[in-house]
Structures are given as structure tokens and as C-alpha cells.
Length: 263
Image 1 (tube, rainbow, N blue to C red):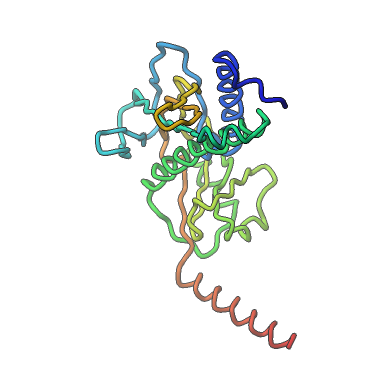
Image 2 (image 1 turned 90 degrees about the vertical axis):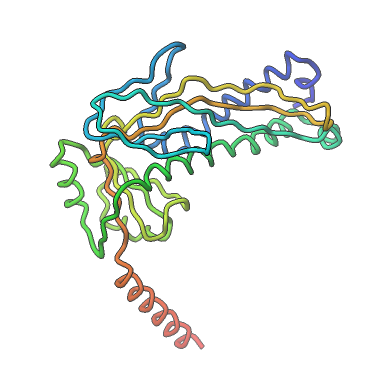
């Protein structure tokens, strides 16, 4: 791709639109919150007000950062907060690249950091849920737990180290694997419509050159909220540490046996 888009303000606006489109696709694929909660694209002036099934958990943005709060009200207005990120490239580096495509990819790689912040906030929200210990479990019991509350078991969130739990997984259950999840915890979720809401008021990307530092840049931001609207829609379990250590010891023992047999 010839380097044409950065020669005019109209071209830079086009690059900003390309970056925002790519970011939206990336968020849809990689945002843990958007895989778990229902996304609500708010129209201008719309109030993010929603009904609560049983106790809500949501993010509050205060002077000291983000706080996790809860409410027993039947309806809540979800506070929106802003997530933003600035991508910069020194002019000296910019002038050495002769491809719009490569430059756009460099900016996109920087702006993807917004998704990391969104995922971290979602895990802080999940961290408000009580822990249940388990050494063994079956998917039928998880199904029954959700059915007791007229909910539908839909997906689970695990660390890559817990893949073995998937051996008997029903086909219809979606699995999200993330290293942000602790390696001894598992989260089970009802359907997104039954879990909570992620309202988005605004999302945009704008040129943000900085003449003082001789750099070319773009700033991306989004105004959104994040709330669990039914605490019965999430089950958080932690693997029994005693049995886990016994299993680890067995794995280590078997590993050394295997090595010994091959020496």
C-alpha cells in the first residue's frame, strides 16, 4: 500500500476510522466481558438503566480509581467510565516506513492495550464473587445449579492449565481460556442476557499528533459501563489445594519415572 493516507488531514481521519473498525473487531474477539455480558450500544442521550434480577455488581469510577460496588435495588443506572489509549510513533521512525499498511498495524498494536484494561476490570468484578472449593465436579451438577434459578448454563472461563476439565464438557458449552484467570479457578456463567450488561455510549479514534515530541499519533477511547445484574448467574470455584498438590506430586513422580525409563 503506498504511503498516501498520512499526507492530509482527511487521510488521517480515514486511518482513524480504519483503526476504530479494527479495534471493534478485536474487542469482539478478545474482550472477556463482551463474551460474558450482553453488549448494549446506547444511542446518544439514552440512560443506561436496567432491571436487576437478584443483586447487582458494577464498576464505579472514583477519584482513587475503579471500585467494585453492589446494590440490592430492583433497577440501577449504570455509571459509564472512559477507557482510553494513545498510540505514538516518533517522526524519525515514521519517515523510514514506506507503507501505510505497516504504519496502521503499528498503531493498532499499541491501541490494543485498551482491551487489556477492559479485561482486568472485568476480572476485578468477578473477584467480588465468593469462592466454592471443589476437588471433582460434573457438568450435570453445574447445569442443575443454574436450573434452580431458571438460568441456562452457557459458558466457562478457565486458565490454560485447567484444560483437563474439558474432557467431559457438553458440546453446547462455550469455553473461554485466558491466562488472566488463576490457574486453580474456574468460572461458570449463564447466558449473557442472564448475566449482565455492558453498555457502550461512545467509541472513537482521533488523530493525536504531538509536535512537541515530534511524533505522529492516534487516540482511541470508549465510554462504557460493566455490571452483573444477577449474582446467581455466575459460579466461581477453586480447585482443592490439598488434592491439587497431591496430583502435582503424582505428575512429578510419573515424570521422573518416564525420564528414568528413557535413560
